[in-house]
Length: 343
Image (cartoon, rainbow, N blue to C red):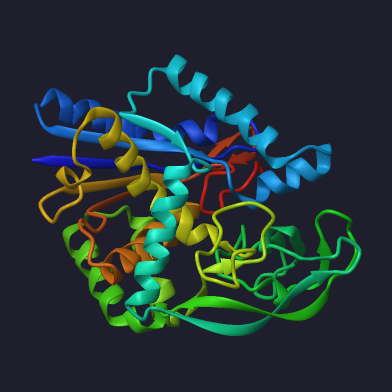
């Protein structure tokens, strides 16, 4: 039996803390358990070196994003080594291999008719002279009135479009952005409504996902899945591999989850193995992360895998709750796929 274990990718823009470790530790426990049983195990993770939080940190410190990513990737690697995490491959998302794999998945989705172009309105900062990536926009959530940023509310978990925020402000200069039109590629996620309902229903019956994953995923499909942008006007990341759109980047929610596959490719190349040993319908796949990352592993990643006919789909989702110490909540902070800092 083959066991694949994917640990969520940490944004390389700040040090690790108890929230990371409490959420990621079950992955290492699972890897050690299955190895002791004599099973074939591939346990991967890495540092998200392309995320918007890194660009924000770089602007704040007046340095290039690559400098921030280098600093924290090195720190993450040393920390996990010292703690004894037994990753088979711990890599990073700014490698040529990762970019190549992500672009290939993007083109597969495009060729199979899952992507289309659409003009949309986005926040544009006239002071910074750029379209603002979602996490560059701060404001008040239209659903729960909490102060938030990005495309998922930290407090009520609703998926958002920052143009809906009240009291919008640019995270870099604090000026109010205007709304301006731009063109992006969209993924036909709504077309997979029935398939996602079935996957979530089976996970609930079989009790293979944590209760919070079943609950949040069920809520999203009940509200109805909507098509989502797969490209953004970002300063760093994986370029869209389509003529005329090279300046745009592939959006993190599709890029980061594909990191599980690119990490598997890296492991295979370095060990003269075939990643297909762990990417087939007979493999049991575990995904380990904080509960704020649930929809990206329970809906987005399964949808992408189904769209490109890749197995296995997530078998088990180990989505951990937040750690509360001295009345402070420690999330899987700055984890790739829109993690959050200490709140």
